[in-house]
Image 1 (cartoon, rainbow, N blue to C red):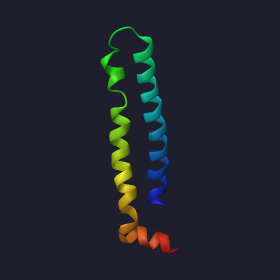
Image 2 (cartoon, rainbow, N blue to C red):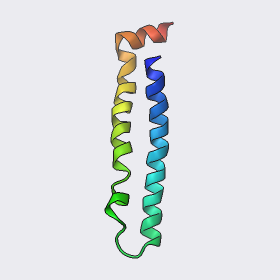
Image 3 (spheres, one colour):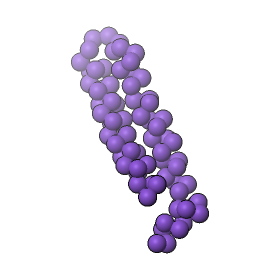
Image 4 (cartoon, rainbow, N blue to C red):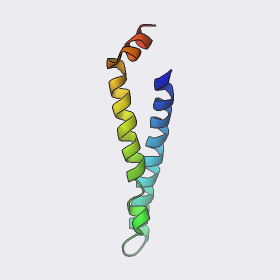
Length: 72
């Protein structure tokens, strides 16, 4: 059950990341000049959180608790 919340947050983080990347491309297409720095770097926090949740989900089957949950 521990992987459930991580999997759920990983999915939502991917949606947030995708939305920020789309917003970044739209801003670059519609705004003359350089967009604000906060918009340029907005995709990075969800991306780093996805890195950590993805690594956790990748390692989960190799742990004892993950193997026990898979067998049940």
